[in-house]
Image: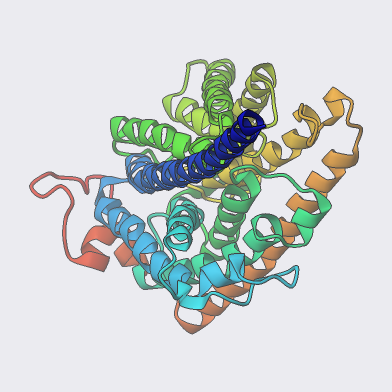
Length: 439
């Protein structure tokens, strides 16, 4: 009898110790998980922040030397001003308590919650990306003061509200709209805002000339293709933080899938744009190939976590083809002056990437048309893309209209010819070099 009691007591003690050990183990695992998530998201945020340098170099390289300093200032200040307004207002509109259309809490992200600060840091760099896309389409003729004004409104109001619909638990999220890392949330928002800005601003002096009553587009070459190329490589590098970071967890193994599909999409986009430009222009065009890589990256951003590697290649190839013909159409048919192709790369290819989810989605949760999912997901994606286009076109159009009437969007003809480095900032980016021979 004593033996049985002792055995029972021993078993109970072992169970108690095991339970305590299991609880401690679970707590340790949770702490490690939290630490890995913190490190991963902050590292990803740093990668996306570095994309600001990439955008600056692409825009600088594809435009003229006399405006290089102005472009640096724009890409610096749109992040600085955007970070402040996103802290005060944008985060609350995007991720605050939802009514389905916008958030209305967490203004100034008050408190000392490390997780909240981590999430804000990861999101503010996305907001800055949306704002800086607009810079390229409006380059070489925009007032610096006007640029600061509209950057604040894009980062603080336009981007957060449509972002709330999709990432903040809003009405599109409830419908099942899928945009993993921002083909629509970030890139199309920036691209459509760029379209409205370019329309209100008008073309650069000498861009479109009339010959025998016919409007002809004249190429205005950038001053430094190697700099633009470096910018594209920096953007591609940062995109791994953009896409793989959007797993939002340092222990989510799908980050490997996302990195692979991102790489394949970008590579296929660059090759497709190179081949199409080779056929169309007779030689493989450098700037088109660079934009092809960016088009593939933008196109794969929404579907990156839900498509197969083969699907990623197809999405990238189509994006690379689209960007070449879109740039040509916008320039030669619509006669809209977009010095870097931002509308085509981010707006049009962002739309393509969003629709590609409904075609190539291959997971149980997101299944596209080509994988037996029917037209349901494709319809949801189309509705979401259209809704965001309407929102951005109306809000950005109104914004540019008001700025143009109240303050003025464009510099004077003399200031544009001299260059914005001297006229807007009183400095030269290449002091000692003659850069005004074509003035």
